[in-house]
Every structure is written in C-alpha cells, then in structure tokens.
Image (cartoon, helix red, strand yellow):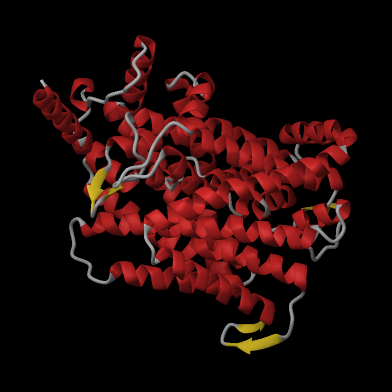
Length: 502
C-alpha cells in the first residue's frame, strides 16, 4: 500500500503541480492588482460585520468553518515535515504560497458565492457548482465532486486522526500493545481513535449549523492559545530570532536539501495547510450570508494569512529556535541531525520536543491537546465538504441513504487513520489534496479566461465602495455574469419588495 500511494504521489505532486499552485496565485495576484494587500483593512472589517440567517451562516462562522479545515495537523506536523525533508528554506516557500494563495482563495471563494444555490433550506456551493455553471462542463464538475468525496471522506481524515493518535501516544505513553487485524496497535491509539469517532459522530449527525457553532467557538480559542505558547517560546529566545529568519531566507535559495526539495515541500505543505487553490475553502464560503460575493472572497483570503503567516510561522520559529529538528538527506542520511534519528518528521514530535525543551512537562501534553482541537475541527470541515459534494450529485441522481453512508465512512476512515503509520496516512492525504488542487486550479483559470466573474465582482464591489454605499447589492446580469441563479432570484425579490413598499 505504501509503495502504491508513493507512486501515485510521484505522479500527482510532480513539479507541474508545484508551479501550477505558485503560478495561479501569481496570476490572480496580478489580475486583481494584489487584492490581498490592497483590501487588508476591508478584510478585517468584514470579518465581524456579517450576520447569519435561517439559510446561511455568518461571515465569521464561514471563516471559522474554513479555518477549521485550514488550521489542522498541517500547522504542527506539516511544518515539521517541510523542515525535516526540505530544510529551513521550505518555510520561506510556505510564506510565498500563502501570500500568493490569498489571491487564489479570494477568486475561488468569490466564485463559490456567485454560483451558490439554496438546497434543503441551506446554502450550498463550491467548485463543483461553479465549474458546472461558469464553465458549462458538468462532467468535469462531477469528477471534482467524486474526487472531493473520496479525498475528504476517506483520505484526509486519516491524516488528522493519525497526528492526534501519535501526539497522545508520545505525551502519555503507548500503554499495552494489542494484536488487531491491522497488526499490533497501542491501547493509547485505540482509545484515542474511539474517543474521536464518538465525538465526531455526535456533531456530524447534528448538521452544518452544529458544525458552525462548534468551530466558531473552538477555532479562535485553539489558534490563540497555540500562538501565545509559541510567542512565549520565541520571546524567551528572542536573541536567536534574527538568526533563524536569516537561516530561513538564506536557505530558501541555496537550500541544504536542494532547491527542488525546499520549494516542493514548502509548496506541498503550504497548500496542505492553507488549502488555497485546493478547493476546500469555497464550500464554507458559499454557505455565508453576505450582501456581495466579493465580501466573502476577501474574508477567505484573510484566513490564508491566519493559517500560514501566523500559525505555521509560530510552529516553524519554535522548531528552529530550539533546534528540535533533523533534515533528511538521501536514504537514511541526515543533512542536519539535532535530535534522535527515529524522530519521525511526518509527526508532531519536533513541535512537542521544541516546547518541551523550553517548558518542561508542558510540551508533549499541550501539543497533544492542541492537535486534538486542530485536527478534530479539520475532520469536521472535511465532513461538511464531502457532504456538500454529495448534495451536488443528488441534484441529478437519487442517492438514498448516501449521507448516512458518508457519515459512517468518515468515522471509519478517522479510526483507521488513528492507528496507522504516519507515513502512509500523510501519503494518502497528499493524494487527496493533489487530486483536488489539479482539478480546481485548472477550473478557476479556465473560468477566468471564459468570463472573469471573480474579477468583475471585485471591480463592482470596489465601485460601490468608492460611491460610499452602506448596503451593497450584486446584479450579475448587469455585469454580464450568467447562471448566477441565486443572485438573480434575490434581485427579483428585492425589486418586488420595493414595488410593494412604493
């Protein structure tokens, strides 16, 4: 299984995908005149201005749901893996993909808002919806939906659960070894897997509103707590920070692990972490209740900053300042070896060792707790994304019982991931991320050249800003945007209300 998954990764994560991710971000940055910089203050204002409705969630709730997908094990174990296999310079390329990816996140999330639908009393949308409506290629949309259900329902939950299981085992010990059909597994991992699955089942059987309420409370709390610990460690070693930043920048272009490894691992883990271009964020963005599609696009762009520039950087600084890392060379060799050779770079152990070295007795249990919240909320986001794509398929095909089957499947995948090896779990996760990224980025680039809907929405929003309006409106017909049925209907309803009041 490991050999097959590695073979698939070699095809999916070829240099072509690495440069496609960077190229798409650069392209949309230029086309939007670096929207991620120009509208930074507007992003912050919008974050707390939206309200939820009976059918949609607020901008902040949508941000929290998408952040719950973005802020996960990639921020702890993923950063460690980028450093462990790509060297310190990989962190720089994570920053690059975050900065450029913010523009990609704006584009894909705005598209999700433009082409969203009202289904079963709630808003639904995402790449499958905008690929069908903006590209006019339903077959391509169906392929994306199926790939996303497989990625978010089977491949990706295992990565998150695996990190939780490894962190708990490192923090509290493995306990007794138990013979199972999957080989010998520690009782710590089995109990962790059972606990995660039980809590997961309780929440996902409660629907998207319960997911949104849970994440809007947990995500800010867990991210803030983690950053406070990271800042504490950096402040206690502040004299080393300039040297660490210099090492990151210096190794970005003359990397110890090779330029391909640094860029490859930086982009791979950057995309895995912030998900810009991957096509996951737009699902939550579509569920938001906003006056104008560009508003949620800007909010989602800001979430990339939170994920990579704040949380991932916090992890990187902790690991590099304390020297709690190795850099792998060819085969079993090490280019840098500061910790034991058996410390798996694809696990949270570097981060646990970094905190433990400064705050003895705190590091291992704290990271285990942080990873539980980070990873658990990410699994919730994966379920919501998979459910949205099932809902998309159900528009055309009657699929009785498929939502229930999805819930059972994701619970099974979560338990399986908790007890499997880290390398296999991460490799399967990379396959899922890569499949979605290929399909989505190609899709949003084709859509741009066909009709430029995300750019037209931005220009319209900026024109209304300049005019000083307080209540924004969106008229897709006026902008030459077709098949934006939700907004066409809203426009007609507003006209009817104005006629009645007159």
